[in-house]
Image (cartoon, rainbow, N blue to C red; front, side, top):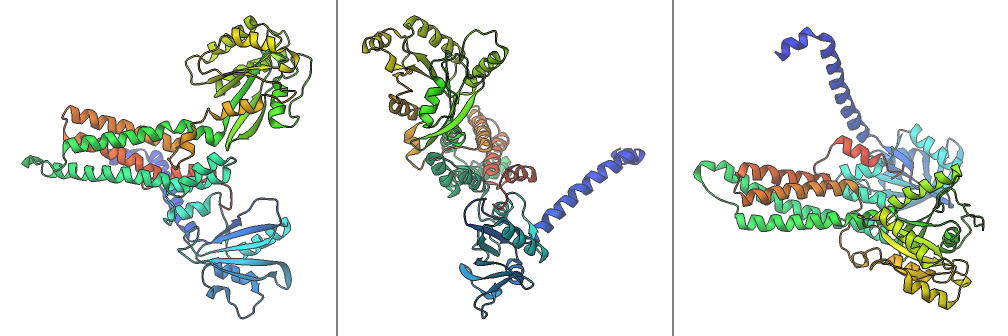
Length: 497
């Protein structure tokens, strides 16, 4: 039927055929590209020295056409790996630069291929000329993440380690850097591989039972299988739970500074930053848009957001700012409700309750900040401390943003938002949404296996769910992957990595 239908609708068949040939052509182009030698700058702008990286089977041959060692007895193509040679990059009789060339022999290089790194002066002109000469002599420009992609394809890194390379580059605080380095060294991969190996062993035993189905034999001990599945599911669930912490470390913990106009929100932001970032004025409603800046507190990055003051207003622009304030409250993990010490406890309590209503049912933390303590007596402070109604996990802090007093205590309380016990060890923490989603699917598949064991369902169904869990674990490390996944991952890398 299909055969006759295709011939009866030639146009449709022609379109389908084109798609097939396009797919095949793309695969051939990818294979051809992997045989090419690629080059790109491996360092960013700034500094006195830049590195240009070359990788591929003809790296030394191409580099040897433009590089002339100071020691004329040296031939680049004959040098051992981990050798550095001093010389000149020349174009005809023109000297472009004096450089150091570092040689890495396959498979002991970043990509697993023959590789060269040229350390030159950081002049944009010099970098451009060297790249032009490399391309003229047979190299092609590297695509974003292509060096790391080759490292993955050549087995130097698994996929989760390759993703961690981008995280290490992006890390801007100690805690996130530690997590990324642990992942790049294979801490996460080792955990996943161990779980996958245990599941594979049991999947093999269950499928062996299917081969001997008529003989009613049992190779996989059901009690032992159930215990192993429970253990693996708990580990997957624990890794999944760590994503909240990991995501906060990766993107910074969002902290919204909110409150009535003229309560000192902008002054507080400036005091925390130790510079004048936000406009400060005695005129209420000065802040009409959000201002975001990051601060490192004990190795963790916090994203502070100064917002427009909350009040009823007929000013259209200010009203838009207040609308944005509500949006930032919904996005924040911590809300610093900043009030004025000259206010009554009754008014402050009303504002506290209004914020509580906005965040009720969430895991957001509310901090109650009483500012401008330099304008009031100790008696007023004691009165507010006694009458402000706060809940157990709501710190009440008295500060003076103008005099920068009380800020150290605020930072201590903020640092307690993150689970420090996890950060001080080598425990694996998930920072990648792709890994998080895969682990959720692993847990779901294993839950079905446990239910099946309880209900004594057929081995066929058990094997399917175990295989699914194995598949999702394999997606994390790249043992099972697709061009679409690889494309999504590596296109977000910088060129030269």
